[in-house]
Image (cartoon, rainbow over all chains, first blue to last red; front, top):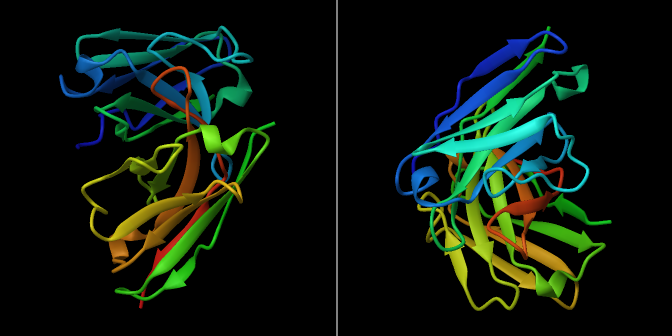
Length: 110
Length: 119
């Protein structure tokens, strides 16, 4: 499977919003409502932020939201905070117990 | 709380073999499917392999099929990845992760172990 396409980097000032796109195909993003987003600080364990396109695990701030249209999913971080600076990866089911990840987006808080 | 600790990484020559381990605690390991995911230097995440809770089904990425074997020991709460015929492009941080019991996602991850394939 080919990696999902994400912008390499995005930035915003504290309080602003950023929206990260994740483009796949009908065989992954477009074919399943099983898109997840992970926050990754280098050297640490990736953290699940969004699953099933729009759902937040317990403890994830509601500043993080997800959506999907056709073959493209999106993660929006509203009210950007300094601690949101990290790498973000999308992930989609690609069929039975197999997954494809995005190329990753580095979010910088200016 | 869920804890996953990977070990076994190191420097290995091309063509060599290495076995990674993942020690699980804080949850009923024998009830969960488990994944291995890797991240090459400067690259994104890549799903590598999955094993069901009872070992009855295993799935692999095309890039490792025939060279890597995922296994587990539920009596020891341990997950393994046997890596054979290693190549330079297998150089990466390897993470183990739990398979969600409620939907299709990987919910808890370890901090990873670095494998470097180099002569």
